[in-house]
Image (cartoon, rainbow, N blue to C red; front, side, top):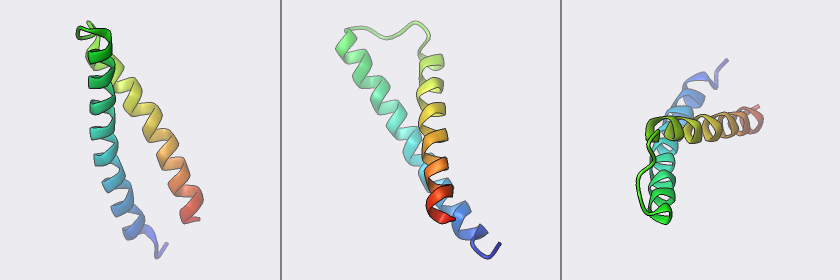
Length: 64
C-alpha cells in the first residue's frame, strides 16, 4: 500500500507518454498511407487501448 502514490505517478506519466505515442504512430501510418483514415478516432483509441493495457500490466509486474 505504501507504493500507491508512486505507482499512481508512474501510471500518469506513462499514460501521457502513450497518448503521444499513439498519436505519433497514427500520424506515421497516415503518412505511409497517403491520406487520413476515415475512422481516425477509432484507430487512435485502438492503438491507445492496446498499448495502455500492455504497459500498465508491465508496470504492475515490475512494481510488484
